Image (cartoon, rainbow, N blue to C red; front, side, top):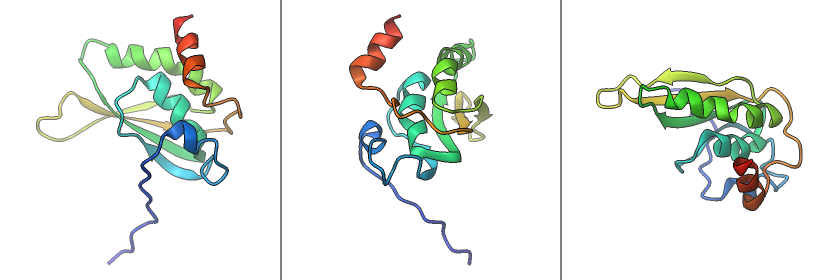
Length: 127
């Protein structure tokens, strides 16, 4: 038997955890249960990851390029938050053919200004 790695499931808002010293840039892997655009997931989750850590996002792909467009729209915030270019992986399970796992590795520290407050993020999206 192999021992299980240390795993913690937290029921909290990412933007709150990212402001706490114990959680900021402390985790190897972060995922989220909420369905949100990648631009939001990246800004909320990357501040929690240590350098070399990975964001794992479960996304749907309509096959018409919507996931690629979503990732292109998130490229700027991904770079600003210290993320590398994302990798898209198919989910190999019957009935989930249109599902993908999007993985983004954190390459450098996230500036303290991230994550921004909800109102600031929404204003930035409107520009």
